[in-house]
Image (cartoon, rainbow, N blue to C red; front, side, top):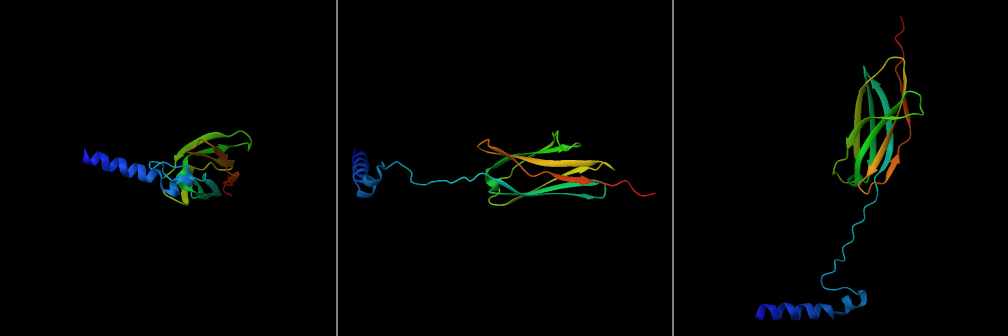
Length: 136
């Protein structure tokens, strides 16, 4: 019975403590706030190395990024998903890459669709690559 009374006294004391009374808090209210800024795509780059297209992008507030849809287009207007890349739990800045076999003589446009953990989405700028046909 004694532990119960001690806990009750502590709760009552905390309930009437001036700092709690001013903020309308109970002893069980958490005052911690977690600020989750949505992830943002900072840069997107595309390059050709050998016979591969390398698409790389950098994201701020990485911990709030859920996934990335890599989209590509051969006409620059109609995009389709080429890959799905999952975000990491790394804080702050995240670096991501996607490789794809290049096609000679074809202009290809890429963009990244970022989906945050709160399900908000945004698109990156569009980048293009074109592997020229070899000169004979």
